[in-house]
Image 1 (spheres, rainbow, N blue to C red):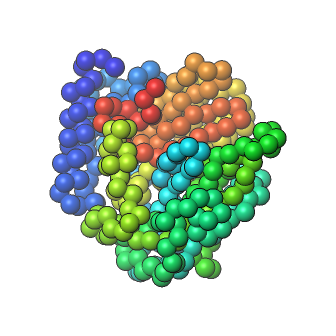
Image 2: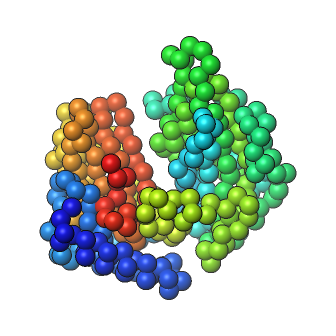
Image 3: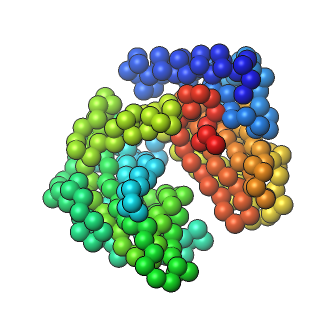
Length: 324
């Protein structure tokens, strides 16, 4: 990244942080954005102003009144844990009872057979998973979280090890399942999953609460990313939903290049100045980044047999994809 880039990057981040500090989650998106990672096709000239954001980046709440996402798994000695968060973006209270229902699928959407238990005892002893389930009432703007726990352990026949890339979550009885992609639940050969109860972790004013609160800054400081509020994610998640089918069509068709990936990213209506793609150096692999607004970015890799799509905050040092 050139020396000319850094003033623009830091200026953009300061604008975003200043807006966040005002306490208004619905403030307008900043005029600038951090410079995309080096080498991306279509990279803007440092110092130029970003174009006006299209109306399609405005956050909108789905008919269900809730939006779900996962937090990046934490790992220690083969033990994995991941939080599923539910944001009440609607205009009425939502009631969660006990545990979410989960279904596991592989990258081809075939069911992954696994023993799913409530509480941690089938996997490990983790107190936060063993709290008595309770009824959780989420007011508009509040966030609840439930944990998923598993071990990446291969006891025999390593060829039988499985990874669930897709997670179907039923947040409450009678509700439709919500599909979450690229979860990377690497079960090995044990095929045991523990689920913790729902717990409210964030109030409408952004204050974290509860023993299982994610403590965003502490857990992810090493990545140096702008933390996304639920309202910010309401811009990033729908953008990811538009990107996935566009790139999946290209993956199935085959023969893609950085140029064709970027062209496909523009088809859902993202401005040319906000969509980037480049060949990674690996065989038949293209990385991409899209900046839909409000400090959110959508990034991933397209390969002949796999597409990844992730929503994050922009890196404070510029760009979106994890540093090499």
